Length: 386
Ligand SMILES: Cc1cc2nc3c(=O)[nH]c(=O)nc-3n(C[C@H](O)[C@H](O)[C@H](O)COP(=O)(O)OP(=O)(O)OC[C@H]3O[C@@H](n4cnc5c(N)ncnc54)[C@H](O)[C@@H]3O)c2cc1C
Image (tube, rainbow, N blue to C red; front, top):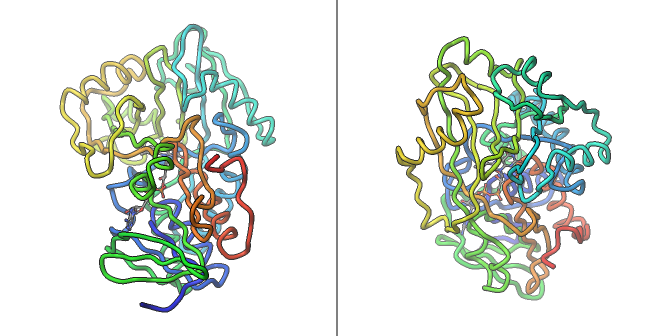
């Protein structure tokens, strides 16, 4: 048995890296444990970019996390010299007729406007003519309209994890990498974590295990979460000229409620023509686990994606898929987050802020987790197990 920590963080992805960094900043004696060496490509925090928005159509309760995360990423940029956050603007596009919901919100454009008002984010509304004029890469329909703001953009998930872990380690955090937690429990004065290599004790334990979380909970708690397979695609533009229309100076991040079954979202080009332009849709039909998920993407899947979601809306993108990656959502009904004390172990805090929109909030969530662990901050009841 090793020394006792103020806090142990199980899982060093988006949420765990942020919590470890915030604990180290507060001078806490902290141990972070991960079965791999984050950033890695087997969980939910890879694929180069994540959309960040302060006006969250998922609910105004998320805005404060995103706004605080922007501040933290700017601080980390200053400290590490890494480029983490690009504020190139955001479009929420919708239109007439039946449209796909986004993260379970049918009227996502209207909900984004409401969230912008609540968070005091300046925005404008664009009609289809303005969208065509400003963003010729998009093939919008007559009657389509969009919300647009300039505080949104994209953040680099792998770099954020790396920056927070390296800064935490520089401030004295212990990191146990390639070490798998096999169980955790608590007695009166501490939480005990058993790994495949050692046993550790901490006054508090934060479980930020992402898609592995349901496998660590008893069935009635695990049933709140559904893990789903998602695929990210990078399609090549047809020409250098078409690629240039996707440059971050000219092209924002977007969420587009389509007449198709699902909405799409995407990013500006962050590399050259050969690297392609990233976009994705979502699926909630088939549940999986990190162990069982298929991590290969076949040609039929790529073709279906292109024909249904790319070709009709982005005439400048070709069917050539430069690369694709499989990633995991950990979904809670209503796209909610759960950030709460474990119902059976009061020294254990469970953090599952994913539901497909967690990264933009992760730095702020890490701060909340650290405050709950070492400064006695109460959980926010809006994110309770319920
Ligand atoms: C395709 C896709 C697109 C997304 N797009 C966006 C977006 O545009 N904007 C946005 O805000 N959010 C987005 N998200 C959501 C966001 O990326 C997630 O909310 C976030 O990355 C989740 O982080 P996490 O820390 O919960 O999980 P992870 O980063 O997966 O971390 C969990 C960690 O726990 C470790 N672990 C698990 N079990 C054990 C164990 N037994 N022992 C030791 N270690 C363990 C794992 O190895 C892993 O490193 C997207 C997610 C996906 C999959």
